[in-house]
Image (cartoon, rainbow, N blue to C red):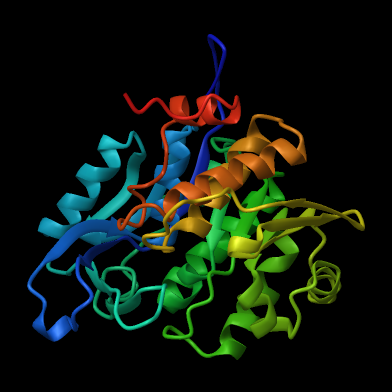
Length: 331
C-alpha cells in the first residue's frame, strides 16, 4: 500500500526471483585469507521488494529456496521488512543459493562468486507460486521482473515467461530490468531473453554498459529504436548511467535526472534495484516523471552508502524529509 496523507491506497506489486544468502567480505584482503564476513540476503528482485516495502508500497515476493538455515534467514529478513512471502516455497533436501562478495584491488565494484547450481530454482523445483492465476484474478497492480530469472533454469524460465505474458494479457503493467550477468550466460542468450519478453513490457530498465553490450550504443533514442525492432510496444525506456544519472525515453522525448549526490560510495551493488523500486513507487503514486525520477535517484543513491545489498535503502519518513529539502535528522 502507499501512504498518502492519512489514506492507504492498495497498490500490490509482484516480483519474483532467486534469493541468495550473501557473505560480504569486510576487508580488502584476498578471499583466501579473510575470516571476517557479514551475512545478508541478496537477489535483484529481493532487493527491489525490500526497497518498495520501505517506501510503503505493498509488495509480494515469489521464489523457491531451501528448507535450510539460509532459507529460514532470508524469510525472516523479508518478513521483518513487511514483504509478503506467502508465495515463497521452501524445498526440502535442497540448498539455498550462496554468494561471496569481496572488494579488492583498485576496483570500486565488488567481485562476486556464486554457488547456485543446485538450488531449488536451478533444479526446476519452483512452481511459479500460483502467480499467473492470481494475475488472472486481478490481485496485482504491477509486475517487476529481471532477466536473471530467465537464466536460472528452463523450468524457471517457463514460469517467468508465463507470468509476464499473463500480466500483459490482463492489462497489468510489467517493468523489466535485464540485469545482464555474463557469468550466467553469454551475450547472445541475454539478447534472446529480450526478444522473448519485450512484446509484453510496459517499461524496460537497462544500464548504459548493458545497452552498449547488447545494442552497441547507450544513446536512448538508438536503444529505443533497437528494442522496437525486437517487438517492444510499451510506454518507455529507462536508461540508467550510474553517476551520470538516468534518462527516460518515451514518445520521442527524454526526461533526465542527475545522480543524487553521495559523499562516500561504499558498495554499488543494489543501486539499480533501488532505483527501480523508486521508479515504480513514483508511478504508482501517479507522480509526474520528474518527481518519479528524483525519487528513483534518491533510493539508488542510498543503496551505495552501505555494504549490504539492500541495507542502505531508506525508510519512507526519511525519503519524505529529503524530498522536501529538510535533510535527514541526525541528532
